[in-house]
Image (cartoon, rainbow, N blue to C red; front, side, top):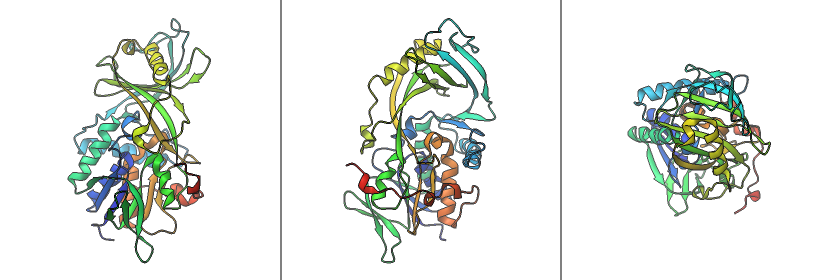
Length: 369
């Protein structure tokens, strides 16, 4: 196949920009169409945690291992503009009413936190700042010939033979292409109006970013936390290279808004998360909060991403549904998609377990406007 193919990528998140990067590196001409902003949703607000072997024993294992290696290679190749850093990762537990108990275990943790073990070393766990990573990959793709367009895709354009020939924007403009990739995160479900795709749902999460300076070393924390009302939460805390710390703990199944710019936090979620964070670490107790965030991560019925061609429609592809491992698996997904589109098959990772045909197509009549 010609390496100069025009490929329309619907979505400027971590997956879409990675596909654009690897396609443009091969000499193709990807066009990323983004209706909100690059990294404007989960790809800019997630934790950015990376793990080599946390998917072992699952269909994701080879994808994750390849992607973990690519993250390190890309940071070195492109000058690390997104704060890639290796981490030591710990697990433990805490209770909201046990501030005076526990062993702490690390100088930056409160006494009420008990560490139970090390979950990862600098050889097996790492971190990126997700907004900088996603926008950085888009800039790197553009430097190689990719293009970024603002717009909302309204439908597909098909050739007389029935193959994909581009997309129509809501403005009525037609953007021609030899292939189209749906990479819109949870909003990929909107593409079921044009394509026989399985359902992709949104699972809402909340996070805070604290300005902690140098108070927390290159470490990550995964806890089981019993709140004062008895609910068990699972806070995650990551210290970033830019002197900030990211924390999450509260998720919900709130409805996904049609407009990505309309995502709003659940009532009280950030206040509750702030109280948890400040109780876990003196470094967070008085640190300013730089951002209060809410986003939806994409999930599928069986928990595996959709990576591959759309059955029965030449030139149509999908890459979404990565759930909590979207940032980790973005590079290997981008690489695999570029191989699939340009060579007809992925070379580095077997993507057969992620084929869209494994799940039934979603009925677009179920969509609520």
